[in-house]
Image (tube, rainbow, N blue to C red; front, side):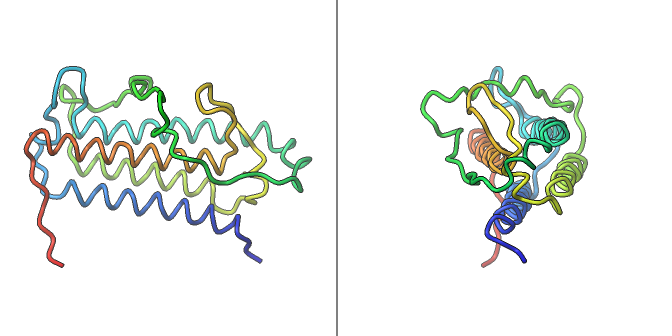
Length: 191
């Protein structure tokens, strides 16, 4: 029988897909030039932002898998204890360090570009790998397997998934800002 925690994991995974589709919608009609145009010094193009999402999601998935592997025995001991599944948007916290993306630098850049289709396919593939990792796992174990972040503190894997969604949304906002600053119009969608 499905419980509320099962539903929150599924909800977060569905949110990941919805956010990605919203992101892809704002990229409709984008030219290759616009994709790789840099808005300013030491700033990423839209393409770099997109590829960064792939890189960080893939990197975090590796960390999730390692944490799961090593800490699952401890989670089994703590199985019946309560845990939290929600977290505030850490990227909106005052003083939160936002200038750390260079740690997960994009592979594709204006000097080494690729197509928008490749960037989209890569992000979909990475998100599917995230979905596959979380799907079918007992949420009560996911809620008791935790990793430590020096800025955010302890995050169980459910909360870590939610932080990843906040991160994806942060870059959607940044891409919209880049489009605005570069004067790139959004496609008109009929109602």
